[in-house]
Image 1 (cartoon, rainbow, N blue to C red):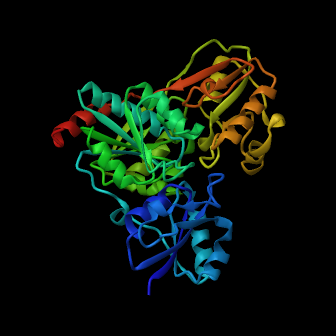
Image 2 (image 1 turned 45 degrees about the horizontal axis):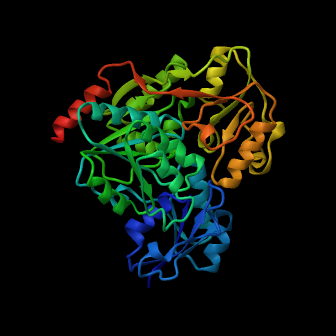
Length: 438
């Protein structure tokens, strides 16, 4: 008898676990996926073209709120939790819900979900969304390229569109972003790499993605999403922590997993965090992973024009504010440092953005850059244009002016990783190159 399975996910880790473990596994029958966190991913199908011979019709995706009813309706044997950035208490609450319905509850480990590469792999992950994975990945890529190495970045999945078309995606130019109809969330992750001349792969089928990336790379860097664990069996694990959320490194899943397997832990944002919080993070690193090397770093903020005394609408990275639970980001910090007057966008919220404010009540005086589809991008544009201010202070990693028609100037806030302790990342990359004979 094949064990009847539901995979709980958010259009990323869930699809990966299915592809590498369940797709051709005759011991299991994956009845459906459930979806949460990301809008407009439930009600779809995991397509038959990606599902393998055991699932000729594909696999349905239901809202997670239906989970108890689905377990009962389909007589489910086990439920797999396969998404990230979850408080430990939430994970056990879901486990209790599943167990009370009579099914087994499972988390899948590295041995059953990681793919081995023929090329050296550096994994960049974090303990929470919004710690600074992207700038850490960019920093490592630039260091390696300065040493003459061909670097390819593989980004954690964000398959919000046509999954078949997105099975293997390659981004080298800005035109590639338009061709693949990328959302704001996708552009935030790819655009900076393209600007730096680094090729990015992403998609759904991460075995095929790896095999394509291997053909044009000396070193592959995994650029993680949320606080998920790397999809590949990496040769070096670099994990980013955030002293603005001290203590989260041991209280969120699977961020604590990342902390425990880290070879190098980067403590980012030390320039704007308290010494007490930085020491708290260091104590937890030493307690839970004493072998890890610690790199102290900051992310200096640059504002492209003078905003002193100006009324500013601050836009921050969406996921960092929502399931990352940060009430502010680089935009608010820049506004305070430069003496701008921050205006409240909430009275002008419309559609799904209004719902975001209702759900994430910790948000104040900041507009999350929600853009999971064309409609949501239009709603973001409406909020921007309805809000009375002198300028938009955009701390998102992308240039919003490329996709939004604003009736006021958009001033960009940028930030890059800067280490200030020794040994630094240059030292560790030299070690990596020697060890793996790159």
